[in-house]
Amino acid sequence: MQFHVLFCLAVMVLAVNANRQPGQFSDDSYSALGNEIPLLGDTSPGSVWPKPQMQTSSPMVYEVAVQKFVFTYASTSHKCDLTEEAFKRYEMLIYNTASQLKLQFRPRAVPSLTTLTVNLLSACEEYPSLHMNESYSLEIGDSALLSAPSVWGVLRGLETFSQLMWQTDTNQVLMNKTSILDFPRYAHRGILLDSSRHYLPMEAILHNLEAMAYNKINVFHWHIVDDQSFPFVSRTYPDLSGKGAYNPSTHIYTPENVAEIIEFGRLRGIRVVPEFDTPGHSQSWGKGQSGLLTPCYSNGKPDGTFGPIDPTVNSTYTFVEGLFTEVKSVFHDQYIHLGGDEVSFNCWKSNPDITKWMALQNITGDYATLESVYIQQILDISASVGYSYIVWQEVIDNGVKVKNDTVVEVWINNKPDEELAKVTAKGYRALLAAPWYLDYISTGEDWQKYYLYEPSNFNGTDAQKQLLMGGEACLWGEYVDGTNVTPRLWPRASAVAERLWSAEDVNDVEEATPRLNQHRCRMIRRGIPAEPLRPGYCTHEWKNI
Image (cartoon, rainbow, N blue to C red; front, side, top):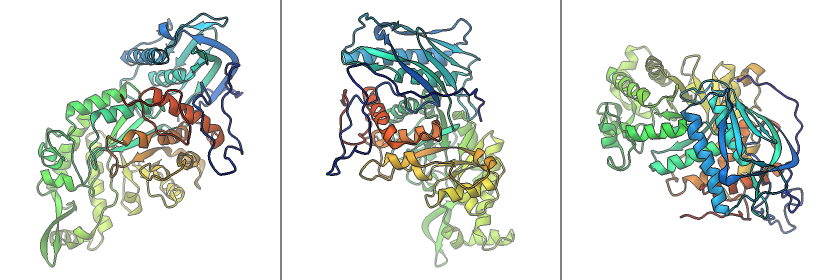
C-alpha cells in the first residue's frame, strides 16, 4: 500500500456560473411512464472522474486563458521526458478544446489562470510498476500548483486538472477554487483486451490506451494470443506468427509495434502486461511449433486433433524458455500473465504416451497433478527469466501447487466473493475480474452493476483484504474488433475505473450519473466514441471524421 498523508475532508459540490446549475437526479428521475428523463449535455460541469479521495471546492471561480495556457516547473522540481511529453499533450488538449468550442479569452472581472506550476518531488522512474506512487495534491487559487512525489502522480494530477475546467454559456472556460488530495484505492486497475479472437489494429489499441489515461486506468492486460490466432511476431520462433496468425503479413504485431504500444502506455503511466495462456488455449501455437501440442487419440489411434501443450516432453520446456526469454526482452513489466484456465484433460487421458509417462511418475489418473507438474515448470521458467506471474483461478481450484508469490485472478462469476476468500486465505495475492466482464452486454444502464460491485465485500481478515491488489474490466474478443471495441468499452469501463480508484463509500449511482455523463461527453469531445448512458445529448456530439 502506498503511504499517503491524510487530511480532514470537507466535500462541497462544485459551483457553476449563475446562469446554470448542474443537473441533479433524485427519486423522480424516471417519469410515470417509466421513461428515463434525458441527460442534459451540460450536467455536472467541472466534475472529476474517477472521483478524488479528498476535494474541497468553493464558488470562487477563475477564468482559464486557454489559448495561451502553459505548464511550468517549480524551481525545485525534477524534470524528465515523461513530464515534458505530458505537458505537450495536455497543453494541446486544452488548446484543441478552445479551438473546437471557438473560445476566446476575454478579460473579465474574475482572476485568470495562465499557468499550472508542477512540483515533482523525486527523480523520474523509467517505467510504471505495481508499486508506483500515483498520489498528488492540486491547489487551484490565485495560482495553480500540482505537487506529486513521483512522475506517475504528476500524470494523474494533470488529468484531474484538465477535467476541472468547464464552459460557461458565453463560451468562457472557468475553474472553481479547489483543493484536492488524491491517490488510488487499489494499485492494479486494469483493462483486458483480446487481440487473438479478432485482430485489433494498432490504432484501436493506442486509442484505448489514451482513453485508459483519461480514466486513470494503469494496466493494459494484453491477451495477445489464443487458440484462434498467434499475432505476436517472435524472432526466435518466426513460424508461430508465420503459421499461426490470421494473416502473417497484416494481422500481426511486430517487435516494433509492441515497442510503440509499450512506449505509448509508458508516457501515460500505463503498464503493459502480456498474457501467454497455456497449457490450454494454445491451438494456434501448434501450427508453428511441431510437437508442442498433445495428439488426441480415438479408438487407440491418433484422430488428427490436438489438445493442450504436452507437459511430458523436455522439448516443451526448452521451447517455452526460449519464447519467454524473448518476451521478457520485449515487454518491460515485472509481470507476465500465464493463464492456466479452462484446461481440458480429455486429450491427455486419450494419449497412450501421456498415460505411460504418468505411470512412471506414479501419478496414474491424477491429471490435476499432471497440470501441476506443467505449471510449476512454467513458473520456474518465468522466474528464471526475471518475471513475476499472474494465473487464472482454475490453477488454484484444481489444486495445483504454486509458489507463494503467485497472483491469482478471479474470473468465474459464481460467488467470486467466496473465491476471493479462499484464494487470500491461502496467502495468495488476488485480482478481481469476475463482475466486470464487459463482453456480456444487455440493454439498459448495465454500468450501474459494475459500479455497485464492492470488491472488498468478501469474508476475510484485514490481512486477507490487503492481499487484493485490485481488478480488471475484461473485454474478450469473440464479438469485438476494431469497429466496436471502443464504444463497447467506454464508458462502461469508467464505472470500474472509479470503483478501483475512489473511496469505498463513493457508491451512489444517482450522484455518479451526471458526473459519468459529463465524463462521457468529455471523452466524446476528446475523440473517444463512448456510448451513451441513456437518452440525452452532449453539447459537442461525436463526429466520425
